[in-house]
Image 1 (cartoon, one colour):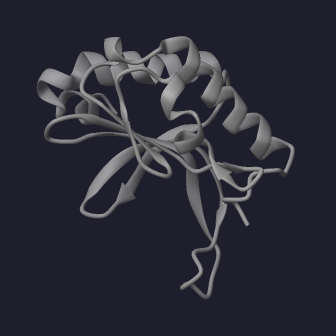
Image 2 (cartoon, rainbow, N blue to C red):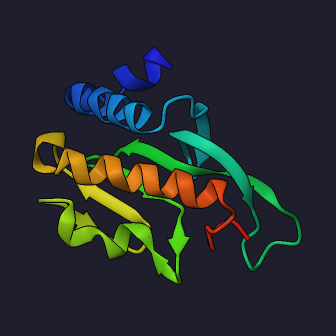
Length: 136
């Protein structure tokens, strides 16, 4: 895993700090490198997931952290009350760009750490209660 962090180059420190924030907000959550496309992401909290186009259920991370060329991405596979959690909380997260389930930021100091930690806690809690619509 150290090689994965080191491969992020100048983003390594922010990647490690984001990892620490996630693990602090969700103590005990499992984490492992997970293939995504042609790369690997740091996945947290594997859960059953079956895309609509798939015939079989697979395991997918509730949260996934990745270093991109110009930013970091935190994928949040959580749908609560019909809304994608990342998209619904975008305005609270600081200077980030959000898609439905992806939070993009250039540095962790541009993110409201308390709001991000709460989002992580809520994603984990909703999944544990069986209320995550993403993990059907």
